[in-house]
Length: 293
Image (tube, rainbow, N blue to C red; front, side, top):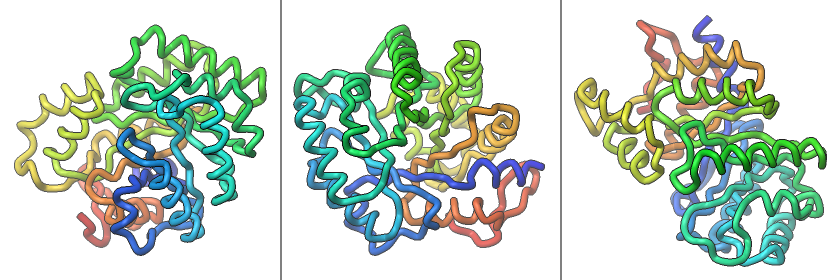
């Protein structure tokens, strides 16, 4: 059953693409059912994002663009950006987040964009919002919970189709507790788990420090003694299995998103192999039929 649970969770996976990586790609080796999130980091330009949307669309794949609220100057800027996206893609999907870095203008939160009606005006109907199983390094937990409550109420009142897309982590326990917290809080939104793709321990540690993933980072450091080679790329099979089994119990958690820390193209091939069932389970380890990493 473990293999079946993994395939079920990974089926229809999404993956993240940084515009800086796009310049190194000639194509994207994915099935059309697998969508591509396009990151919009503080050091990116709007043109970088739009060119990456064009690139993904030309691959006949669906782009899901990050819309970071604090990067926007004002709601007019949000409107212009959404119109530019609509000129380049038929995708109805978008991810609305607070965003990292300093606030550039008058827009302080993703909630303001959700409330504005601009997404509906530009035919973005499937809206991802950030999920923080281990809290946010930028916002205190009470504020995170308060905003999540408001977004959920807004989704009901405005008939918005929202999905929680989580930050990555290295230990399943906080995520499982968070899903149970959502249930107990009667927040009935679908959850897409953010999973770190195969990468070296050193790479994972660096990304964890940059992202501030809290308790999960402490867990990774405590388990560093188990890693024989800091530069060998491996997947966290133990956590993968735990999440796959939990997804069979949890009705709201059925979707999978991957952060390709070990390389975009190789991670695509790794995910394809899992989605297609091209692996066996051996001593609670995922063994691909054809080695990728």
